[in-house]
Image (cartoon, rainbow, N blue to C red; front, side):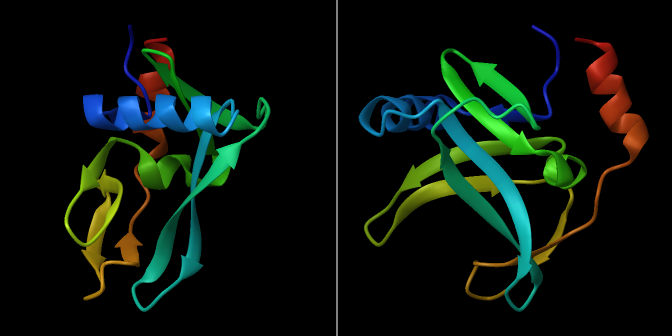
Length: 124
């Protein structure tokens, strides 16, 4: 398998497959939006049908759609899933993230270069 825009941990793969099964979804859609004190927030929504206007990463049956306008911001990100006493949710280990706000809900991200994205697409 070639390189992908994002990677998924085993825990994230299992959680995404569980979401797909229990919510009758084709996968999840990951994106970003402006917001929060640091400037941007990650978004995750259910993908109830194939999303032809998004990039697709499928690993071991877990399907993630990546919003086109978020690709350069998410390039190289490892998506994990964490369960703690106080919360559970997806974690983004993003090499393009510069900083995060104190509450952890918003981040500052610089986009990766188009050349890095081209390298990934050339290996597929």
